[in-house]
Length: 292
Ligand code: GRG
Image (cartoon, rainbow, N blue to C red; front, side, top):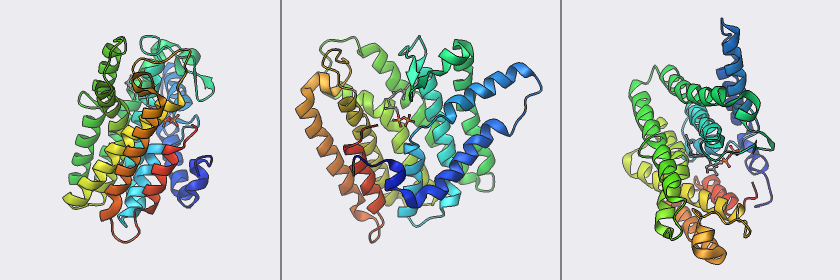
């Protein structure tokens, strides 16, 4: 299974993923700026938003709603908003003041094509527009809209992704960083957005608290496992990255840890009705063996 693409594993969800793709396109093409300079900003946003990401987080939102036997159409704007935030984080993470990367998804990074200023602003615009998508799409369900805005701002902000990124920057230089500190950074920097993709989908379905909490815990474990798998994928013995589990505790232990997290994530699905957790279970397997 690990060699298969997400697309082929989850072929049944393709029609919904296409709708997400269309909405993502609309976010950057339904609006023609009056001033031509702003057209460059929109192009820069589209360049990263529509450049072949796996759509891992949107897919998780779809699978969650399906597991809960909810209305998949109603989760699409949520999935779009989360993917916009994810895209912004990648653009900013590649900037010279962060990771200073030249290539992403096999293409020059955003700032290499559009320059640093526009790349920075494209990220800012995607972040801001994500919340506009939520406000506009869930206008008729104000309670849900408010809860989604609260969840996403926490996951992406100080107490989530940004907090994790700051810890990563500060601690990446420490030679003796403890695996627990790395795990904490991974959970915030990468895990928070994955967890919230799932939890937000449960909110859209009006899921009762105990089931929502189980799914959030599944999301926490999968989010952490996603970054652990990434540490394994990125492992380079010539240039070990200090803030990675492979550098801190070695490949063997990191792989065993990935197995443990994956099993714990699967265990969280036991309380779902009938066989509904099957697709979420497949996602754990995909992550365990992923090559991208
Ligand atoms: C600088 C605002 C800011 C945030 C930085 C999440 C993050 C925090 C930066 C993203 C950079 C990064 C490589 C984080 C690790 C998480 C990760 C493996 C992201 C890649 O996610 P995929 O594999 O990417 O889902 P695709 O390309 O498939 O969308």
